[in-house]
Image (cartoon, rainbow, N blue to C red; front, top):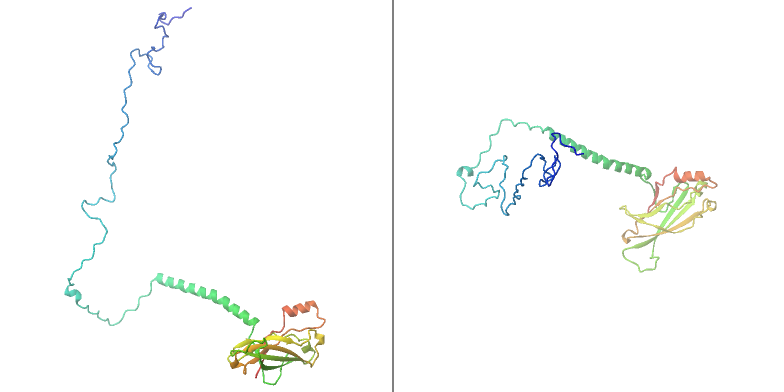
Length: 303
């Protein structure tokens, strides 16, 4: 059974047989007006986008507000003009000497420096003082430490032919000229000297002080010094073999200029070492690292 529309009109049959609400066959499917039954209008052709012609620019659309535009024709160049040579002289008033200003009865007091200048001066002065303290304080401390560990020597002058006594030991020294012990030809700018130092223990305390001298050197009247090297030492290494009253020889050699060979004196610094028999290791280490004596006494033998 075929259903009819609500008005009772039967559906159409034939080539135009289509649904009641269906659009005509020539209408595109995207046409939205379903009540339109006429020809479909064609779309209007649109012009292609304009392509700018090479070489042409569009005029600017913005307007300069600040800074204002310079007047046309005005030269804005910063190039300096060359100096012109001329023989023109300045006016006579410019050549006349200027009279000195009249002296006032009382000179005004010098103006005080401004506050920033005083502040800068204080900062500079404080910086300099800090540098001086930073550099000088360690130097002064080091010098004082050096003087404490190496105080000024106490010199004992020994006249020619006499003995010098220090810490229970008697010392005698002789000096004589010798030839070059190496066998080389003699030279006019040097003179070899031989030193013989004799040590004698005066008592038991002197016997345990049988260590070699800490320093021996030549000294002239101007204070110049020349080193002396030990060649031979007859002192027994064992304290038990050191006899009281027995002299032991130490032979040394050195080189000095011929001009002072007859006047140089021998400076001998005795050692503070004490070889105590049957001493404990603890006492020995204490004497080595915390000695109670300083090697600041020197015997100077005159010639």
